[in-house]
Image (cartoon, rainbow, N blue to C red; front, top):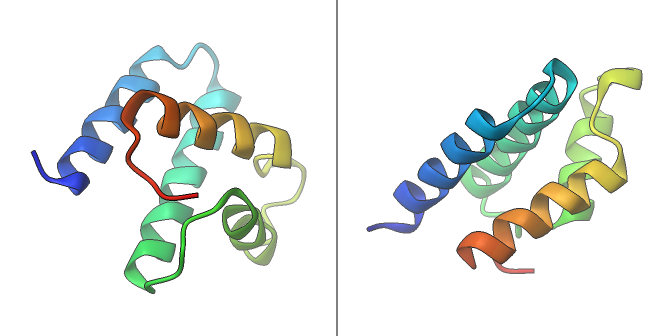
Length: 84
């Protein structure tokens, strides 16, 4: 399985486990940020994701740094898919 396919499978699992709309929205935004950073050949880190979200001016509904780090850590823990 390719890295991209593994990430997509993990993302699908996380989305299906999301328990509320805000959590789902945060996951979608974090995935969007990761995809963009990957396309731009920028190292995907929690800080880079946070900057991407702030740059989009998503306001109070953006994932906060704690949510980003927790989601990022979840992806690393379950998949070992991204480099820190």
